[in-house]
Image (cartoon, rainbow, N blue to C red; front, top):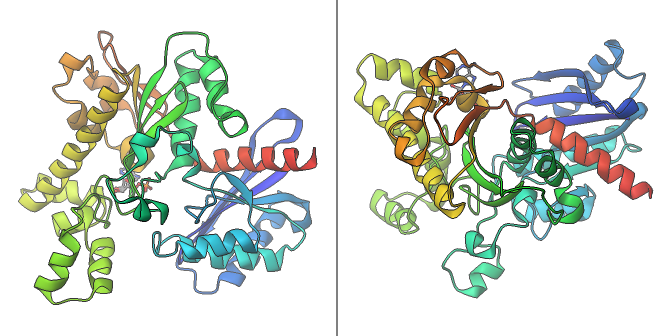
Length: 396
Ligand code: AMP
C-alpha cells in the first residue's frame, strides 16, 4: 500500500511516499519544490518524479494522498477530505491564515489531478481530543467558547510521534501501543506499569510543548490558533487580549495590519530585529547584539514556563524530549532550557548533549531522575499510518 504525504505551503510543495507492503513502513521517495508559482505544475512534476524514480508505476497506484491538515470547524481526527471538510477548513481560514488556504487550494488540485485516489487529512488538533476540558478552556463566556474560542492545540502529528517513540525507547511497549491506537479507542487501553509522564518539546520555526500521560496529551502550549504559545520564527506567541485593540488605536493601524505584523514581524524576528532563523540570531548574539540575545532569552524563558507547567500537572516527568529543527540541532538552547533544574531531577550530560545533532540520543546525566532525550520527529509517518488505518477501517 503506497501512500503519498503532501506538505502544502503557500509557495512550497514537499512530499514523502511511504510503502506499507508486508507489514513494513518504508520511505520510498521524498522531495519538494520551493518558490512554487504554478501549483498544478508542481503537482504534475511531483508525480513525474515519483514515476521516473520507479517509486510508482502511475498515480493510480497511490492508495491515498495524506495531508497534515491544521484545523477545521467542528471536524478533527483523520477524515476523508471531501467538500464538506474543505468547507469546514475554510470556515477557520482566519485562525490559520498561513496554513488553511494553501491546503484547501492544494487539496482541490490533487482532487482534480487524481480523482480516483482518496484524499485523507489528519488534523493537527486531533491529538488533543482527549485532553482534560480544564486544560483546554479559556475564561470566556460560553457563547464565545461555543464559537470555537478555546484551546485547540497543534503539532499533533509530531507530539503523537514523540509519545509513541519515547515510550518505545523507555521500554514501555504498552504505552507505545496505547499512543499508536489513540484514534481507535481514545486512549482507553490499559497500561501495565506506573504512569508514563512525558514532556515533549517541538522547537522549530513553529514551537509547542505538550505533556502526555500514558501516551495521551493533557494539553498543548498552542491555543486557539498557531499564533499562540512560545514565540515562533515570526509569529508572536502568547499575547494579552488587550494588546491588539491597544496597538490598533495607538499606532493608528487597521486590525488586518496589526495581525500581519503579529504574524510576519513578531516572534523571534520581531524580538531580535535580525532574522527569523535561530542560527542567524545566535550568531548575532555571539557578536554582542543585545536584542538577539534577548530574543533567545525570551524563547528559553517561555519554553521553561511551559515545561514547568506540565511538570506540575503530571506530578513530575519520566522524560523531557526535544524535537524539530531547534530541538534536534541546537545543543546550546537545550542546555539553556535545562539549566539549574537539578532540584527537579533534570541534569544534562554536557558532552552527550553537545555531541547530539539530529539523531536519537539520551543526553541526560546518569544521575538525572528525568531522562532527557532527543528524538527526530516524523510527522509524515504519523499521517501515513493514520491514512492507512483510515483506508483499512473504511474497507471493513
Ligand atoms: P523547523 O521548523 O523544525 O524546520 O525548524 C526551523 C528552525 O530550526 C530554524 O530556526 C533553524 O535555525 C533551526 N534549524 C533547523 N535545522 C537546523 C540545523 N541543521 N542546524 C541548526 N539549526 C537548525
